[in-house]
Length: 96
Image (cartoon, rainbow, N blue to C red; front, side):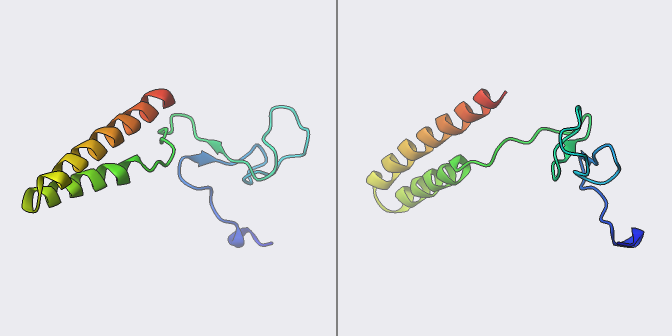
C-alpha cells in the first residue's frame, strides 16, 4: 500500500500509537485494539442518537393540526410534546 492511498484520521480522532488508526499489536498495554480510534483531546462530546426529537416534532405537528381542525388533535399534540420533551431532557441529564 503506497503512502498516498492512506486516508487521514477523521476529525476529532487521532490515530493509535503507530500512526495508523487502530494499528496496534493485540494485547499491548495502553494501546487500543485493532480498529479502535481514540477521540482527540479536547474533542466535543456528542450525545447518542435518540428518537425524542422526532417525537417532539410529531407533537408540534399535532398541535398545529389541532389549531386548524379540532381540539382533540391539540390535546394529543400537547401530551406527545410533553412526553417527548421529558424523555429527551431525561436522556440528556442521564448522559452527563
